[in-house]
Length: 114
Image (cartoon, rainbow, N blue to C red; front, side, top):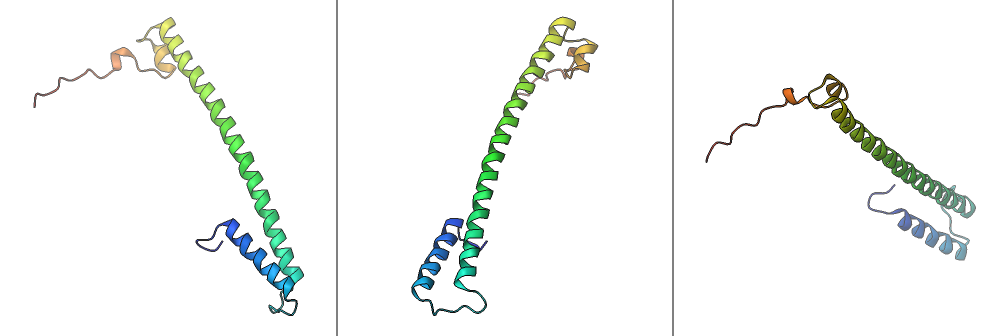
């Protein structure tokens, strides 16, 4: 894509060329004909439409995945709290589930006066 041009600008510029070319049928652009240029523009339009639809689908999938991840994260947190409640905060089971045993926590240090 040309630097500094949006898809809308490219499409608008192409449509201007098509209108000018239709009004001036003697215009020539080497091997490119009006019909082939119109086909290029239509192909671009279709590709852009497919890209936007794929982007929309990807956004939906990302949002669904994030929602599912939040549910799993919340459940994991609840489970860890449950393990702590059942087995205690200093148990091997709590550590196995991902918690830090009370006996292994770093003792808070006193702040030095400034």
